[in-house]
Length: 158
Image (cartoon, rainbow, N blue to C red):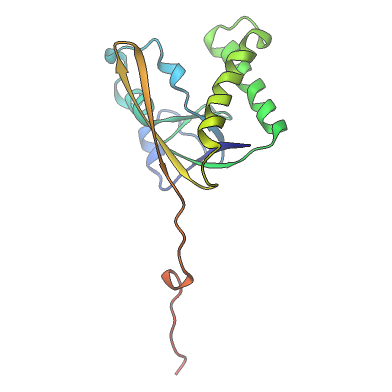
């Protein structure tokens, strides 16, 4: 089973997101956060989170990039509970029990998206508002192998 963890290729997330995710947090798309938004609300850092931000499941911050990695059943179940609790605390769900199936569906969607990719594949999300709601598209960059010669400097002690 696979899911995605937030990664940082540089410090830009610190500048573009209101609440940047830390590297290594489990993540999902999180497009539901914008389901009731309109263009006038999507400005500044909120616009950046909408356009390109993955939602972390620890801090509920945003990240530009995630990497696909294995996850255990226990971790997956724990994340479902965390997300269900977040739905109760921040979106008005009446209870964890009521929110749990929706949280599980969000995680299953992310899991199915990650499952066929090689570990360490980098994923990016792009969102736009359409007449029917939030549209998401995804891009994946498979890990590239590099030879030692690409990083090592060879020379002589003479």
